Image (cartoon, rainbow, N blue to C red; front, side):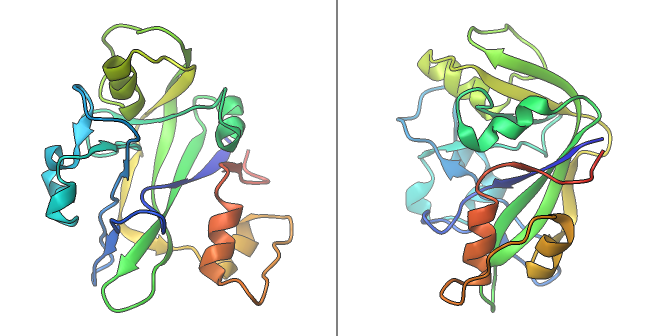
Length: 212
């Protein structure tokens, strides 16, 4: 079984923040889409459990709700054929795991990275260049965007089986955890924060060494 780690959700460049609550629970805010809203894309207001944690002015913007780990079917999509950051997932197979890393904001502390959930892959639809018709992939953000715009750019969609979902509590991912799971040495520069270094190294989806 291979394990991949994917950095998801809003980051420092966005105006919204993913909150981390005192009891360790959290909400993962999705990144905004880069085009005007059209159905069947989702707007932030279509996700009330998330919209309440964002400014009201952003309620009408379309968002890329991916991974979707709270719906009837758990899915994650990415441009594994075209985007260099996702190339590693072209080697993913059913039985592998994608673990999701996110930047969360505690109420009274600085933001940090946390592991927030995982997808245990049980099916894959690779290289979608035309509408595949109805199926388990329907609610995924990539399908919604493609059906809204007519642009099918060889993206992949992964379905999660048993064991998939958000964790009840976020799990800290600091320098100690990074050095424990990655074999190659990371360069921790004095002029960069731990948060910046982890964000830089995990911008690309990575397969964890030794995970088979």
